[in-house]
Length: 277
Ligand SMILES: Cc1cc2nc3c(=O)[nH]c(=O)nc-3n(C[C@H](O)[C@H](O)[C@H](O)COP(=O)(O)O)c2cc1C
Image (tube, rainbow, N blue to C red; front, top):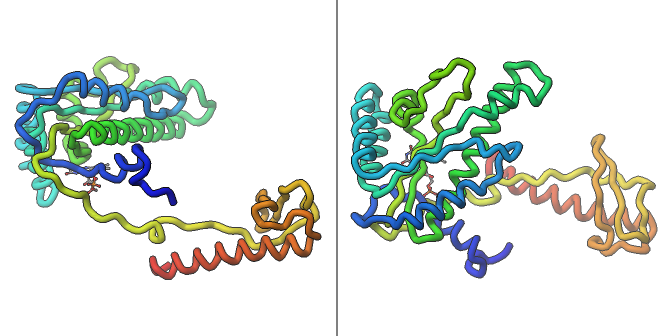
């Protein structure tokens, strides 16, 4: 695994963590523009960029925090406390960016795919959410790279209709027109404290290597450096050069493949025992 300390992008990914309280220090508009440009460069389904970014500061930001605090009283704990905590982050940050899905992919996507209307709508809504999530992550990473802190506030989804109305994105304004959807609200600013983020689960816990039982077929072209194995109804390409088996007969190749696959299986068993599967 590459050491993240020797790679700028990996360094930023490793140092990103949620920041919820900020210094009373303005953020230059040029930096916000760079952050927005980075978000806008994220991958998106059909390259539709079905997102919208709304930047708020000053009075408008204070009004949003008031709305969140006000609405929090309609919820029991702990959601009411998380909403109030979100309001405090909004107040504390000099700039807040709201991310909305535009709904355009849902509206026009149903024409692209000849599948059931309901299924198409569900599919394209998910694609919009996934696209915007990629944009939000780009935004957080860009902010970190510029020395800024940020936090993804998803809890405002609980009051999404109020939030959409606040941003002038209320549903069903024009019948049949694309409807905006709430995605995230992100306070941004210079971190109040220098802190590290929380610990993450280990790779062993979250990764599972799927391997195939070795059944090397005659389709191996031993001298070409590449061949195929077939098992469980799947065919997988195996690099024979990597196995050190070029020029060997098929029994030797098969033994080499077996060795690799057995090692994978052992790794899987170890990982599964850790996570108690
Ligand atoms: C979809 C999503 C929603 C989140 N919503 C909130 C939220 O409403 N309030 C909050 O304080 N943090 C929120 N977070 C931030 C997480 O709490 C945070 O990412 C997590 O605890 C891991 O910490 P880290 O970001 O420092 O690595 C959200 C993160 C994601 C990805």
